[in-house]
Amino acid sequence: MFHYLESDRGFSFRNDEPLDMRLNPEAGLSAADIVNGYSEENLADVIYRYGEERYSRRIARAIAEKRESAPIESSSALAEIIRAAVPKDYRYGRIHPATRTFQALRIEVNKELDRITPALGDAIRVLKKGGRIAVITFHSLEDRKVKWFFKDEAQKENPRIRILTKKPIVPSAEEEAENSPSRSAKLRVVERI
Image (cartoon, rainbow, N blue to C red; front, side):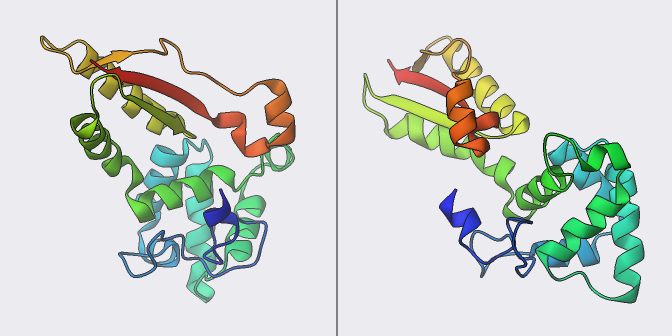
């Protein structure tokens, strides 16, 4: 979590930082490139697909309108646009109204979902018999990919792994109270056979 909060790359809407979100600042499009360059429709699709944000169309419309007058370049500016775009009761919910949009942008910028399957395959390939892989996900789309990868591997004719956690391990209420980002964490563990 430190690399997100202390990066000065706009991962968090709690600070006024440049809207970058790249884990590798030398690679690919930044979040500002996406926010200012994607069509309204493509932006809405990214926000909906990766953020599972029900107000994705409203948010994309507000972003498209705002960027007509000036580029959106900071995390706090984007967060304010999102906050103003959603219904009033949604602004004061359990999570900040910009959370899902920021998550979606981070996933799109870093192509995070595309990296999961190859990484898991490589991990299993190099793991010795009896070795274990533990994966913590923070998003339902990530968790689904991990769950189905492990399930498919474990059900092959000659399986390489055995699933140790039939259901994911989730944080306790106490841990969530002490560490709010843990609220969406899910842990899955497999063993090489």
